[in-house]
Amino acid sequence: MNGGLIGAAAALVLLLISVAWALIRGVTKARIRLICVLLCAVAAFGITIAARGKLDDVYNEYAPQIQQFLVENGMEDVWNFINDSPAVKETVEESGGAILAPVAALLLFLVLQFVTWVVYFIVTLVLHGPIKRREERRHFRFIRALVYGAAQFLIILFVFLTPLFCYLQFAPAMVRAATDVELIPAEAQATVNEEEIQKVADSPVFRLYGKLGGDKLNRSLTKITVSGETTYLAAEMDSIASLTGDVVTLKKAGDIENWSAKEAEAIKSLAASLGNSKIISALIGDVVGNATGKWIAGEAFFGMEKPSVGEYLDPLFNLLLQDLNKDSQSVNAISDDLETIGDMLSILIRDGVLTKLNDTDNLVDLLTKGTTVKDIIDVLKANETMSNLVDEFTKIGLKAVGDMLQLPEINLDDYEQFFDEVTDKLNEVLQDIDFSDQESVDAAIDNLTEKLQTELANANVDVELNDEIIDLYSDVIIEQFKDKEGEVTIDDLKELFGIVETPASVPAE
Image (cartoon, rainbow, N blue to C red; front, side, top):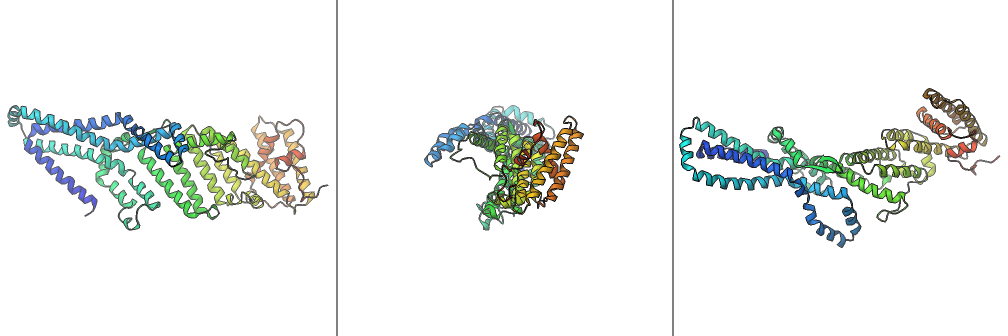
């Protein structure tokens, strides 16, 4: 017999007992007891929701023990960070309250039940005579007592189902996470697995409970507010479980050199899980705010100096730190940033860029062939804060093209002709352009794009840039020099392409 059948059988037995006891009591006593039970349920849930703040404060009772444990294990910096972070403290307190609330409501209901039963017993004992005489005048005593008994049973059942329903909302996700990290033995996974737990959560009893107000009650009991944003325990646990699975996938893949499309998707999924979790976003917001603030100021964060992502990507990374520092105070903004970073990392992993950060030749080859630059720019454009990185990433693409122009196999005449011709065309469009007229700007971009395409082909540069990317390059070049006094020089353009001096591999005139 499975758990569902056992539960149904137990409920039926309790229903019969409740009805039988109501019939024995009589209509008047059954009705009084029903009113008491209903008031106890309403009071238990109402008091628990109203007093959630007290449950949230449970963390403060154990704060000294937590501090002692961290300090004794050499993690005093971690304690200081937690203690000094409003978001971390708020998260711990709110999460603790959300976990305890369903059980607290049940326990309070049982206490109130006992108190009201004692009062009920004394009152009915004292008024036994009047109640008996009133009972004799009642009509349909059997049916009414039966209804009162059944109603009392349903209220009690509703209260007892509340913590089960609340925890079953995230139990499947937690089982999945426990399975991913191998906390559940293989031999037990046949019965303790996400599918079996989900079957219980989707059973008719719990579906009916949810429709009768259980869903709303569950959300009220397990509501979590972090940094002004409201979320719910079940949603947070689901995000955390998804995150755990993605982390396991990446860990199993080993070094980043072994990462492929599968790991790229795991990165995207992981970032989405981080972004979907208000709790994690708030915590990461605090961490990111502290870390980026330190690195921007040239200081170390927890002993970690600002990472370097290579000559090509360092300028972009520095701007990214500023954006993250700006958004770290907003849960929604940092959530969007995490998803954007996840999408960017996914593209970089997919195209093998991260494994070539210190291999300039191969990195240049990747950035000038394929869709890496275009795909990254599309992702950045979708994020309002990070859209300011588009120009910087476009300049990275221009520098990659500049490196291709400096290859030994590029003829000196072709090299010089490229910059001569493009500089002349640039000065021409800058002279004719009307920056207040978008059509004029677009026409200038098209003219410069056509010239760039022609001269790249004439120089025999081995790049595979589509029209959209070259349009972006043209746009950045024009924007870079639109306020320049006097004409743009060849050296000005070379500098934008990352060329500060004539390469040794290209014979000087």
